[in-house]
Image (cartoon, rainbow, N blue to C red; front, side, top):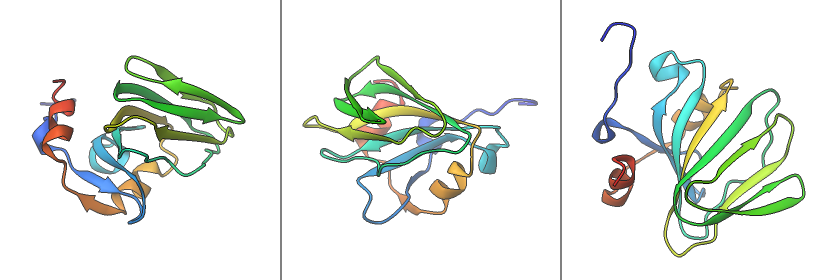
Length: 140
C-alpha cells in the first residue's frame, strides 16, 4: 500500500518499559517501526496498575479510555476516567494514570511529538498480548 501503513490486531507487538511496571503497550504506530511523527499505542494497565509520575518537555499526550475504570492526575488535580473519556496533557505537566477498577484499563495513547517515547517502549521487555488484549484491540 503505497503511502499508507496498515496493521492488524494480531500483528501488534507488546512491550513493558521496565520489568516492575504494571502497564504495558501494544504498539500501533511510531517513528521507529513506521516512520510516523508521533507515537500511538494502546496502553494496558493491570488492576491497581499505574504510570510512574512523569512529564514531557515538548510533547502533548492524550489518553482515550477504551475499556475499564481509572483516575488521572494532572498537576495536583485528580479526575475519574472511564470509557469514552479523553484526557490531554500539556508539556511540562506532571501526570499519572492509574487503574482503579477490578479489570484491566485500556487507553488509546497518543504522544506528539514522539520525544523518544517509541524508543523507550521498544527498548523494554516484549510482552505477549493475551486474548482479552486482542479482543479490545479488535474493538470487541
